[in-house]
Length: 261
Ligand SMILES: Nc1ncnc2c1ncn2[C@@H]1O[C@H](COP(=O)(O)OP(=O)(O)OP(=O)(O)O)[C@@H](O)[C@H]1O
Image (cartoon, rainbow, N blue to C red; front, side, top):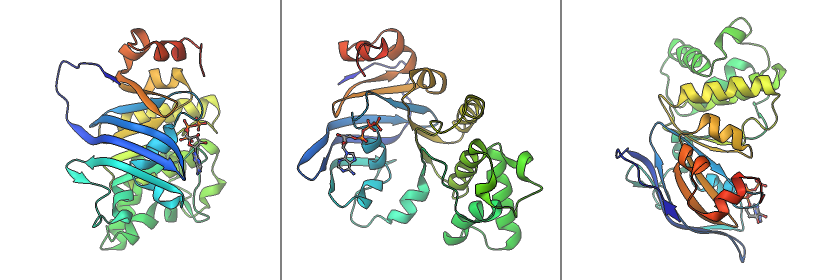
């Protein structure tokens, strides 16, 4: 892989070293090294099946839920090894939250969707504290004004774009450091997509974001860093502008110019 030089030395929120992933006997990722910059959006791009989602799921151990999946190598959150035997995986998934392709609110009210996580993690010691967390999270997810008068209504009664922002609020409510997004706009119309993209740009002030996207335009619009995967290898990683205007590897160039994928 080619790691492009950056002038300043930003802090890395997550550090990935030598990560390989297998589904049974089939290897899906090969020796991936990646530094994920703090308070920045890193886009994972590449042709279908190249391993983007597999890689994303390594970052909060969602692959643990797939029986045949085995992860080798090291992944640090700050300086903590997230695959260490004593790691509390439930806490890890709060610290490294996830938003999925299809909005998946719980079949509960808007309020309960956001309150559920803080309640099970014991983050609020009173009803008022919980209400404050819900309000702040919905505000940060850019949804408060649209739902403040109907918090008791079902979350799945919202539009697709609102549901996705509700899922973002749900992730925010448990005070994550990193938010993983797996094609978060692929089920949304262009207007809802634009709203979520704007939101992602605001969220990076506070959170580190890693997003899988099929859309190179989206990667160019929302990310500061881009990692290009091909056939299970991380081919190239660097500043988004460099990857799109001056890629080092011919495979990256072929992909961004539409010749592969
Ligand atoms: N649960 C699974 N069991 C077996 N193989 C899997 C599983 N999930 C993914 N794979 C395989 O791992 C490889 C990488 O898949 P992955 O979904 O990570 O790629 P991707 O780049 O995210 O693809 P897409 O863009 O199509 O979503 C593929 O060959 C895929 O078939």
